[in-house]
Image (cartoon, rainbow, N blue to C red; front, side):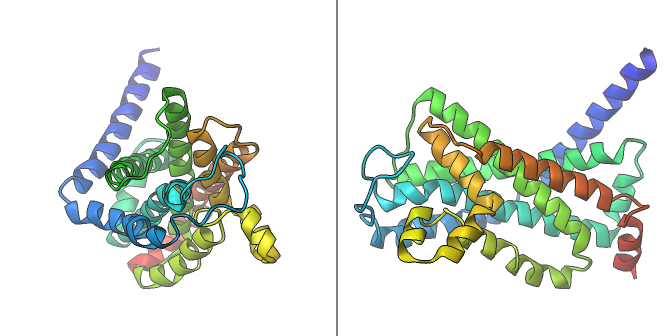
Length: 277
């Protein structure tokens, strides 16, 4: 019994240390927070301004009335913040692997999945902080979102789940991105398709109505679409349908594959050697 208690204490200390390390790294990097906010704020303040009254053809769930464009894309821009931070965490993992820091971390006397879970939670926490900062800036710019306590709690839960899913995707990508030089190209094949083939910027019914059926079908299979829709429906306290199952299922799948990839018997040993070469 004392050994089990000591093991749990050790595991919790490691979790706290890893999360605290990421927070300490992030705290002095004011430019990182500003850069995380520049993209969605530009979309909100500039792009959305020209399409503020684009809606008017139909009223689609979860909305009960006509809404301005900036209100529609707000959940998608929250998703943008989560997506880019999740991919940036992947870059940090590749860098740590090339510097040998990941080898040191993963040789700690704790289950490897627990150490990776700690990294996942740290990334999701930073994503959540940046998303909340964006929501505050959006409010200052005049974008009004529902403020009922129940819907806010539901939206917070959906945002946390989306942050974990995208962080787990970044964790999985860090297994396969072997060098920093290859990171930018890989991200172009991940970030932009995920973002633009989703409901972040335009509703699916408009795509189907305009005849872009292939985009509509691709968006249906995009987990980022379901993450954005879960946040959108949660803000209005409406049933998100299958979105939570897709988000949580993708989270579990990506994290499981990442743990397998970081197992020395399945890939991390070879990747570490290539990165050190």
